[in-house]
Image 1 (cartoon, rainbow, N blue to C red):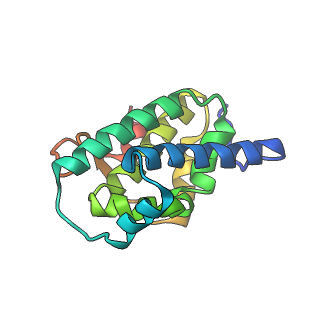
Image 2: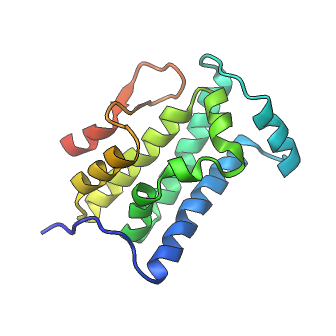
Length: 166
């Protein structure tokens, strides 16, 4: 029987929050290498929407590498569940990561990829993924979320919900 998706308790809560924060800080360091906090804030203030770019695709490939490594190495289902319970929509505002992802046109790709990989890992741990999908739908509208394998406007599109068809 698969375990139901419930929130972490006790120390798991702190560890789960730390897992989410660490993941976003690693993504932040990929987006803003060698930048001080003030320099990064200047970039956020100058954020404008743009079309797909090689810069965005390169950033997304780097983010995928981080997400793959962090989620694959995550030993705790509670930490993965925290991604759904607390979600990137709360963490994305740390140091303006969301603004930079929007500027690069990679916000949807990044959030979708994180959820896809976390769902995939939860399934390999024997956890109930459908509960995670319900949490996603109640927190933010991700019914149509998908990511592009190569970022930007690549043609290899993966639906987040396709993890259940594997």
